[in-house]
Amino acid sequence: MTEQAPTWQELLDAAMEKRTPPAFRAALSGFRDDGLTYKQLEDIAKDIAYEGNAPGFRKGVPGPSKGTWLNVCKVEGKEADKLPDWKYVELLVLAYCEYHGLDEDTREALLIRWADGYTACRGQPRPHYRRRPIPSVGTAKAWGIRRPYAISAAATAVVLAAGSAYFLWPEPETPPLSVDDVSFLGLSTGDYVFPSSMKLSAAQVEKLKNDDYGKGRGFENWFNANKGVPAHFRTISLTVSGLSKKEVRITNIQILKRNCAPPLTGTYFLNGGTNGGETKTRTLFFNLDDQVPEPTDENNEPYFAQKSITLKYGETETIVAFVNTNEHSCGFTFDFTVVVPGRREPVKQKVDNGGRPFQLTAIAENSGAPHPYDRYKAMYVGGVAAPLGAGIVPANPSTYNGDPETLSAP
Image (cartoon, rainbow, N blue to C red; front, side, top):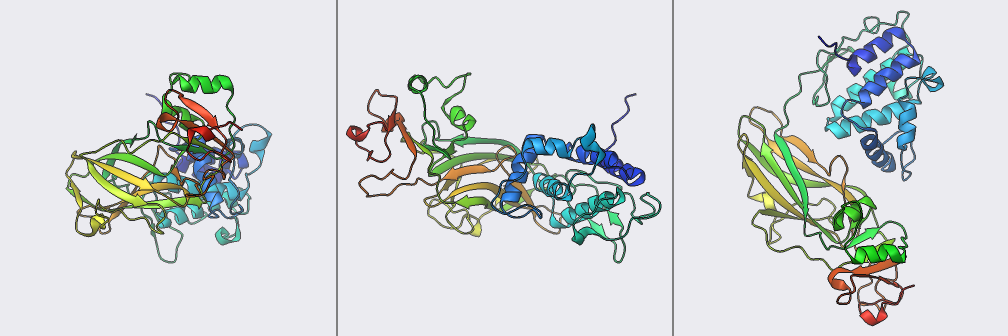
């Protein structure tokens, strides 16, 4: 019989008994490994820190890199002999909760639990979590904390016993929806913007002319691999199915915006793509320029004002979300509101792009000006926007105005 590896909860209890930095780091490493890869942790934590939602990190400055997180969670070597800075512990808890969709009560209880372990190992969390002095005996019992009987990545509620430090963690409930597929429509020849200036060599341009994107990549794969951001609109197909044994109702789908800023003005690839034609699936329209983007139908009426989407167990629905912006560059995720029979409150379920936010930028175009693209640092024209048979050509954004005769390269 194979012996199971200890859970992070068991490792944290052990750390409170051993009261050593290596034991605490082992628990922290196990916690990170409970669903989060280092890459996912880096991406989520960077966004949290940048938005100013992480104590100890300055707003507007990207959070820790992957290398920093590797050091924070090290369990061997000299680094393991000291506790990581508390701000990293707190940020990891915040990232964990965001990734698993845990609520505020669960997040606070997890922070208290990790702060207790940190203090037991002779560290000092930030003052908000310094609840008591280090006990003389380093055990969970000495701290007056009952060991949780069920805690997992999907835990969604915490019961705090009044006037005590006892935490009761109920068994996690199954999410009401299964997200079966997330894909993109109408982007095979869409426009993209890179955040910084990109100078392609003549050989690279020639390859792109011949639809050679390297390593078997397609058009969109090449832009994604090089951190290109779709411009103006994005059409996203979301296929979900019911996981509840009872019929559930989707009563709203909102967009949660992240890191909104002015449009990107690095390198613009103007390809002249369109939406890709009609679709027979359910289509919702979102405008990222609205303060709270709400879904509308093709008549610009609130979609869920009179409607809902019902799903029986195993029943599938494909929702096409047409998202556009004329003013901003934003990351965003979808937030489904689902009514489940037997649950007192509607369930919120997040849908993202494989653990990361979707991205979209407005086109930084001075419409009607003699040189509408002069805000960009570099520019390329391809697809249906390029002269017939040209494939892809460099353009000078300070002179190009849509006329092929103004396509002189910088």
